[in-house]
Length: 275
Image (cartoon, rainbow, N blue to C red; front, side):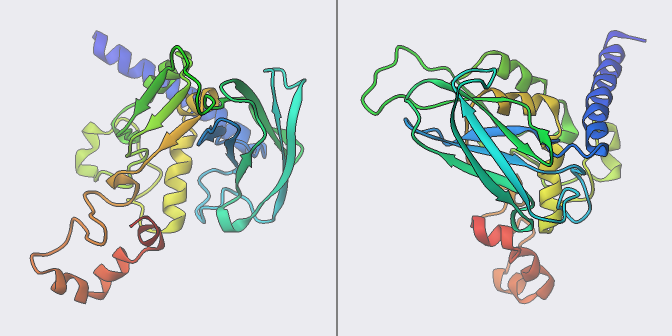
């Protein structure tokens, strides 16, 4: 076995171990298999996120959930969650696939906070976030990290773990957070780890593609370490799309739109919302 084969096999074993750990917890009914995240920091607030998904890749895209669930959240000034300064209750339901979006206000500028969710008798991992500096503040430094074009099938996300360890004040995702496309079997020799299914084309498959990426332990570590901002690029929707136009558009746009199958693909609700 040469050095390259050893590294590849070691990485594969590590990924199998991590995935096994998370999916084992899912089998036990643990709802926070996709971790926690924060984002959109202002000088006095931040958005907190999680999603209840005991079965992250359930075919209906609902993560193994069926009934509304009350989710409590806490924000503290310490990593042991002893000094809680904000708390609340929110309902996770089917409409948003049991995801939770909490807009927390009344925080102090330019300082770290820690947060946690509780639901179904279980607690989430503790996440760390940070508010933005006050509007007229002049901080001596801010540490920023950015990422883009992260394709599950083409490699591992160890760079995310490295970014988390550098403790950035803000992480910026510049697009292609996921890849909606699944490579064909003809390219199997280039695929490091397979997607959860074929190319995403409907709401359930898009939800599951995001869920798959969020099962990655290194991505979870980064989201739990720092607040994030993001924008999208083509692969959050469809490769090389442009507003209403698909990469598969024919020479004559009108001919393309006259075909019902093409129009149905372009009029997908996710594409309408993002265009």
